[in-house]
Every structure is written in structure tokens, then in C-alpha cells.
Image (cartoon, rainbow, N blue to C red; front, side, top):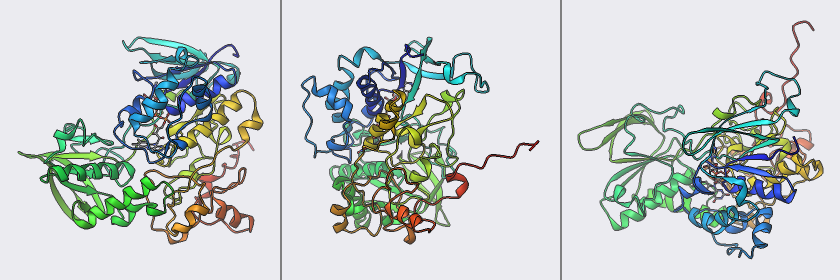
Length: 491
Ligand SMILES: Cc1cc2nc3c(=O)[nH]c(=O)nc-3n(C[C@H](O)[C@H](O)[C@H](O)COP(=O)(O)OP(=O)(O)OC[C@H]3O[C@@H](n4cnc5c(N)ncnc54)[C@H](O)[C@@H]3O)c2cc1C
């Protein structure tokens, strides 16, 4: 087993960071990347500015490798675009002489199991290597044995559909042409597609806000351009998110610009809006839905669906996974990130222990580790892989240690500008819906101390005082705590 490489799925920033940490510990990675280049998912949103500046976007082990090759750290305070992240960090890292020979491009992992052990087979499971089945660019199938697997394959290729029930609405699959998922390059290569047209943007997170603001810029040049914006609930207050309280000013300003545009009439906000159907009309498309209790028909030329992403577990079906039924993250991580219960965006740093599955030696890290929760950050992913690799190397002490400092998002509603500097090391949030929950407001106080089962400092304090917690991270106990051992039929 020890002579086998550790398979890393995905050469995004987190997969490459995993490879860099493996090298630091003299372990050999084999990285499978479906795209033609490293960071291929990010290249698809290369025109979008990250809301986090460079200082939060670079992994420590990767940085050490790069600096040995005379790489220059970009200005720590500048927010790069996705394209700059790839060009100035991910591409040089992937080309590093230590990593490059271990990355296989245009290889798509399609199945993983344990050698000669189906999911039902208990015998010596942990002693049996993983078998990674992958397709090359011509569709030919190959297999590679690995001693452990780190799945960093992201969620970019699985955007959520526009139905409020999580399913595609009638016509969504049929009329693919007018529908774009994510953040199209409205001011660049896709300009002609949107200029002078009526576009409906669906979604309320960071991606939707970006799309709306790009369309607004396009409207300045081409006043015929019309923008409608459908969100499930909340009106303009929800758009602001952390607002100007956000320690990431770029992110806070985005929400404010969007809310102002709605107030000024540049954007027509439909909220709460439920889409039921997309159908073709002689000149455009009709979106049939409900605005509150009223049936509405909206004639549009284009739709931009920015309703988040979901993980792909299809190639993991022979492995033993344990997933929260709501968020689809591990049960230890899910209560910290579930947007239904956690409005503050404060996520306790976590690593190998929280990310473990019943399958020994298998970890999901990066964007995919958050399942359907939208609050993942690169800095969190880098801490995950540091800890996971330490665990795989047998260094449990380092795996359990917390080495993460993150900025405050200000997503808690009662946070004031003054609290930003005081709480400057909490987690930032992307896409997190702001909840109208007075009881959750101001509940953060910073990430909970390591090893404490709480979502934030206030939650930890409340629990230490014998109370049930501050409420922001609470969840039905069946989902938070391990289930009691079932009584067997003969007991
Ligand atoms: C528009 C946008 C803006 C964001 N802004 C920020 C920000 O400002 N700050 C921040 O911290 N985070 C941000 N994020 C969140 C997150 O950091 C990024 O999504 C980041 O790319 C996640 O990195 P990753 O390595 O986990 O996944 P990805 O970057 O998605 O990389 C996964 C890789 O795996 C490959 N892959 C997928 N399936 C397979 C397979 N079966 N076999 C082989 N390879 C496969 C893909 O081709 C891809 O290259 C943003 C996300 C989006 C979408």
C-alpha cells in the first residue's frame, strides 16, 4: 500500500494544494484533471472578480514550492479575477517541476472502489488499495491503484436548475439556448448575446449579483438592455448580505450596488418569485411563474440561472460515505454550514476529523466538501488539505491542530462598522442567504474554539453556561449528534 500514490481528483486550487502538501510530506500524488489545464473550472468564470484578495487565496505549501522557483507573490490586498488566479497562481503551480509530472490532464474519474471489495465487503477493507477508474480524452478506460483518495473535484459542473423544488422546470431542458448557468461574460465575449435584450437573472447570491451588475454596465452602453431579477424571497434587504460591514469590501459593495440599482429602477426585482415554466413564443420566451400569490408571465430573451451548485457523488457509489441529508456534507461539518440554520457565515476551522467518511483513506475536500452549502472559501479548503494530508502521513497531532485565520464577513445583521476591526478574523461568506432571524443576529463573536462542538464563540459560551446554544447553529439533534446505536433484533 505504501508504495502506491495518493490519488487527487481535480487540479483546481484545492486539489493542487493537496498535491503540494503531499510533496511537503514526501508522499507521491497522482492528480486526475478532467480539463485540459489546471484550474479549468475557474477558467470558465475568468472574467469574474473574486471577492477575496490575494492574501486569502494562496495556500502555504503551494506558496513555498512557488517561491523556491522565484515566483512573485501578487499584491496581497488586490482582488484578482478568476483569470488572474489561474494565470498568476494556479498555472505556475501546476507547471512546477515537482508537481507537473504528477498531473494527468483530460482524465475524468468515473468510478472508485476498493480492490476486489464491493461496498458490502468488510474484509480487510482498509488494507485494500483504492481502484480509480478514469477515462482518457478518447474515452478509453484505465485504472490506477492508490493508497488513499482526496476528491477535490468541485461542483462547478453541476449547477442547480431553476425550479424551486430543486428540479428543472418545464421547458428548462428543452430550451437550452436562451439559458446560461453561472456568470456569463456579459461585458466580454457574450456581449452581443445580451446587449439590447431583456434578461431575467434567477438567484440571490454573489453570482447572481455579479450577473446583474454586469448587465447594468452593459445597459449604460446600450440603454435598450432590460434586466429583471427573480429571487425566491427577501426583497432588496437580502441582497445586501454583509453589506458595508463585510470585511471584504468588494463583496459588501457588490450587494449595495445591486440594491441601489433595484431602488433606482435600473433593475426590476421580482421577489418572492417561483418559476414554473419556460416556453417559446414567436419572438422570445415566456417565463410563467408566481410573484407571491399572483400568476405572472414575463417575456424575456435570455435567462441567467445563478442558483448555486451541487456535488456529484455518482462516481463514489462503491465507497462508504456518510452525508448530511440536507447539505450533503459530512455530518460533522453540515451543522456549521447549513444556510437554513446558520446565518452568520462563521464556520469553525475544520480538517481530517470533520471530513472523515466511514471509508478509511477517503476524503472530500474543497468546494465539494460543502455539498450544497454556498459558503466555501479557498482559505478553508487549504486548511482542510493541510489537515487531511497530515492525517494520511500519520501525523495526527498536526491533523488536529487548527492553523486557520479568516476574515469577518459581517453577514450577521447586527454587526456594525465598528465590529469589523474587532472581529477581523472570521469567515467570509459567498452566496449565503441572509435570514430574517432576529434571534440569530449578532450571534457570532468569532469561530468557536477548536475542539468545542459549537458554531461560534457565542454559541460555545451559551453551551458552556448550560444553555442550549445561541440558536444560530442549532439543528434537530438527530442531524447533529451521532445516532444512538440501534438495538439489534436479538438484543
Ligand atoms: C464565481 C465564483 C466566485 C468565487 N469567488 C471566491 C472568492 O472570492 N474567494 C474564495 O475563497 N472562494 C471563491 N469561490 C469559491 C471557491 O473557492 C471556488 O469555487 C474554487 O474554484 C473551489 O476550488 P476547488 O479546487 O475546490 O474546485 P474547482 O476549482 O471547481 O476545481 C475542481 C477541478 O476538478 C475537475 N474535475 C471535476 N470532476 C472531475 C472528475 N470526475 N475527474 C477529474 N477531474 C474532475 C474540474 O475540471 C476542476 O478543474 C468562488 C466560486 C465561484 C463559482
